[in-house]
Image (cartoon, rainbow, N blue to C red; front, side, top):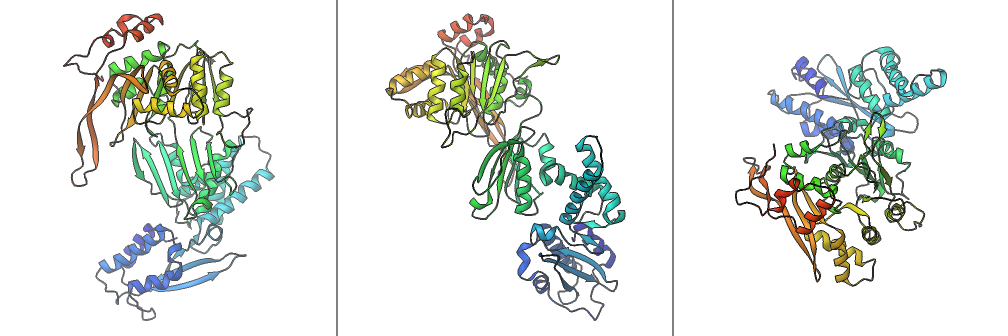
Length: 565
């Protein structure tokens, strides 16, 4: 593998004075590339092409014309077993020093092939796996399997691989680097391991083996690390979804699962892509719980707004958190659920389970919480399958005070959730909507698909069950903010009556000079309404002192400012 480091070494050693040997043919740069790559140029990985381009560009920049440098390309053809492995030896100057480029034709071809100065990483990986398997068979070692595997990988690199002689394995000249990469491939998730472990990365998206994107702090970044090919990527996908006992196959081309760390992952089979490429999205959750102070620091809400939000669950007021995908709805709900009395029984149903609600003190769970993970409501499921609707029906028989369906999607789920609210249970959930009114309208539309109730009666029942709608958005600068909190007063015909208490007011945009990329959205939270007498009375009945919500019972002042510190 010709690496950038190897090219720099070459540049320093030979100064690109390659025209002093009569035995080398002289060609133009374009002809040289065609001669070397021929019909297989598209199969080279980007890094290899980058190295060759770097070499040719530097030769021209050092004052040599296209006719003045000599570059001899010799193609060797090796056929181990039933596969073909192409290599190209570039011989520079009188020293005849060789730099070899391995052609990445396919994963099988890459896993074989060795020379005096090069082995492919795939070949090293295959030999390392054999070495580990052999040691596990021959040794009776009772130590932790993970620790033993790590030790065997080190032994293989430092002792077994070429007797410890240092040479390039897929461009890796450092033993330490090779140990790290082999460990990632065998025990972890290959090139995305460091991003899975990085707490600052929220989401990893792969549209193909060379098309990886990351989301961090609400912003999308292009990832420089790539998979070798589709087969390599499919092996990593298999690792990601293995804990869910699922496989990506032509018969199951779409999989919604979770990793052993509990992260959500959706993967699709290469056969349903027009480019014949697998794809996946991995959504991570922070290892530590988000605290109100974190969201205040990020100005996701103001102090006054959080005072209202924290009173909603304390007063047994059912709520819906709405917003676009990735806006932080589940995170906000998890924060609010922690305000519920620990002895009030809470049952949640998610797919997959995201909220961490168990409170542990001195090794003992102190809150009455029961969490379920449902399966998709696909065609052919029975009443005994743990779908969202079936688990909602079952939850009503388990004496819940609160029921928390992670997200309502199907008409049956909306109908069952409303039935739960009408039979003395409080509930919280999320759904996708464009605002407060739209949330109630979507609830009504979905409910009517499963009910024969008159629309006006259905809307009246929905508005009686849902007391608050919280709207959360992800803005163009990557920040997530609660942009509206509204009380549901009732309905007038087919129109819900909403009483907006808080909203986020955008004042201006800060752009990057030249590119006009959005750097910051400048705005502030503003109280625009007050609580109804009915909600105030409900809070008092729930044991909340008036002084805790008294400021919310007054009309907002003209100069009233929200605080974040």
